Amino acid sequence: MGTSTKQFTDYFKGYEKVDAVKGIFGDKTEEVLANLKVEFMWFGYMGVDNTDGHLMVNEKYLNSGNRTDIYLDVVHELCHVKQWMGGRELFDPNYDYVDRPTEVEAYRYTVQEAKRIGLSKEQIILYLKTEWMSEQDLKRLVKNMGVDLATQTKIKLP
Image 1 (cartoon, rainbow, N blue to C red):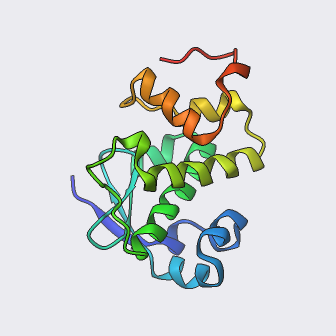
Image 2 (image 1 turned 90 degrees about the vertical axis):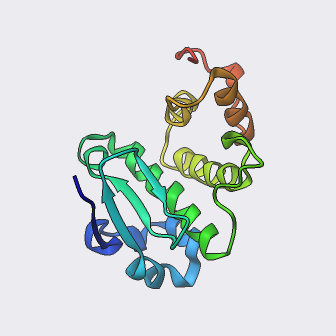
């Protein structure tokens, strides 16, 4: 199965008007999004290609995933696009995923947006939970994001 590439604004409509996205790119939001390429792939969820900063998206996830998760993932990945544009190392191997400065920054911004759109602490924790994180990693990430685990009782961590 091959991949296809499109312009971000051809596929993701209206993101140039989203305050969270404007908070990432400021006055350059429309320009950045108009020039951003999206590669549709068959694996994973979403990510940013470290060679040229384009967005990579699993088309199946985009078509069948939870809309709120997808929205937050786009915000998260656009943070990484901005980081890449600034010359930052997105995949610094000196850090575990949940401690990597670029991930902590992108998750912190994404959690701020999740709170703004009304997600509860429990929903935010569920959003942060991924199949590749251990229970300790998730707890560390949650702590990094400032989400108080002591107040959540409705979900059980993995």
